[in-house]
Length: 325
Image 1 (cartoon, rainbow, N blue to C red):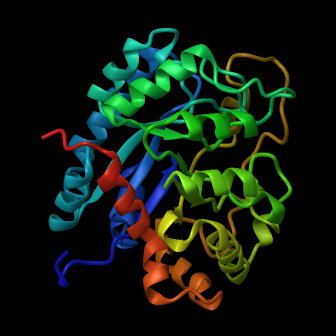
Image 2: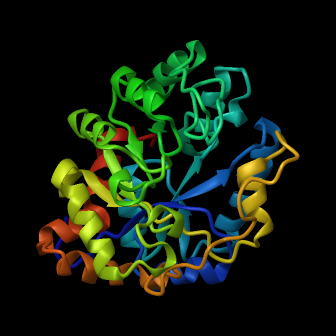
């Protein structure tokens, strides 16, 4: 790394209503790379449609973003003053019941995939199910295939047993891209000490979420409280295995909340059908550099702060994604 290059800033999860304005804000905020959600409940064909839309975005905004396939694209983005976009899935539904579709999606640019969303999937169990049956037979096969390809396993919405089994089964480190310590915000959507310790022991990475429902005081959480939360997480994970996965949903209409939670599998409304207000200190990519204030106020040093804001993600990607060139 040369000294004249800018600091590495990486957001490990966003699902915005993508626009040129948002991509420009990534540049203004200094974002080196962003993991962007492609879809939730759609099958393979619908996901390909989303990927076609992404190719159009890359073409129309090639001066500010580029499709990232491996760690070399992070360096390419830095060298050309652009943001590298890694594409991912928050639900394994796009692979349907065909293990071969994992490779097809990898070839099309998908680099992250969750083994479950909120519900039971063909691969594992989501956190909202009453009973967590763990990794399924197909899930074991999918983990092997994702390891072979270099697709990153994400356990952000997994149930406790599913997460622990996936961490143990994977031959490569996995991530929980956007979640917080459960004991600071009492929601099973967040993660327990047990899961964090297992993730740490297998060299995995935790991305701290800035979504209000994952924070200890919701939308009223202060920047200092964020820093204190990060400090509590670092006591288990260490700063070298801790990053940011903001779960930013900028400019998304409230109708998207229903789609995320309900998809097509139910006719029942689940929870409030609107996005909660973002904390005042984080409303867009323009605010990403402000996170350093919260970290420093909680006792992080400059090196540790740089790790959490991007260096830890960068190291993880370098060791996890094969060079496809």
